[in-house]
Amino acid sequence: MQGSSSTTIDQFLTWLEHEGKSSNTISTYHQELKKFEKWLHETNKELAKITQKDVQKYIYYLEDKGKSPITNDKILGVIRTFGKFLKKPDITFDIKIQQCTKTNEIDVLSQAECDQLLAEVEENENERNVLIVYMLLHTGMRVSELCSLNKTDIDLQLNQLSVKPTSEDERIIPLSEGLKHHLLKYFSSAEVEKALFVSKSGDRLTERSVQYMLKKYGVNAQKLRHTFCQQLIDKGVSLEIVSKLAGHKDINVTKKYARSRVKEDEFENAIRSAFSRRTLN
Image (spheres, rainbow, N blue to C red):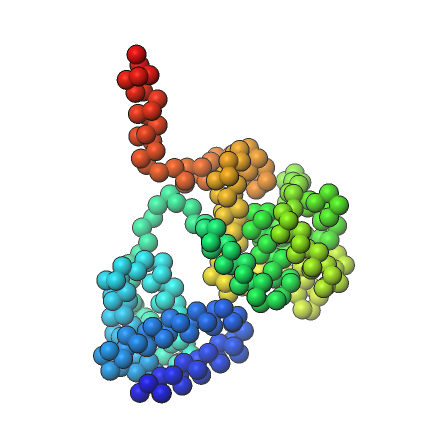
């Protein structure tokens, strides 16, 4: 039974390669399926013969172990892809899974997650994709703005780039050291004429293509934009500066990043500190 399951997993991994999945994505899928396989073996079940009931029981098992709804949803996504490979998409139909509790928290990457993302993309050795991730993470620009960039929008002498949104004022964003480094590598490895980012056919890269590439690494452009703004706020950068760098029309949009990092007990501490007995005397 063990050998049969391992063969099925190997065939699945080969299928993922043909589907164009990145090595990191394939590795993640492999790890999660091995965990699922180990759990199935405890009840003498085979991975290749799983049913919808098996998947549901596994999700309940993960929830009982305290796994977060976000984690469980990702694991279900792995099994859903595996079901597609088996030509048994019904194994993930109507699976009951705890939903994430909606909060005012903004979905951002932690510093460790940023480092991991950049390491994974750089490991892929595609300078265009590496630069795209750095560009989104270190400038906070929108995907539409990124796809519209031209070579002339980059000024390596002044260490800045200009973003020209439709019907909005141009904004200037300084280049981080990491971003400039990868810009130089990109320019030395690719012939850039006008559009900064192009497809294999030489056409300007589309928003959909960028989002598809990011999806392989488990992120989206909006999350990278949120992370850019949040990291600046966390470093003490003023709301006005963050608002201008991000191109927010309304500063109230920027204020949500400040609120998202304030813990509820800090409100109480602020009141106690401001209106203590010592202050009132």
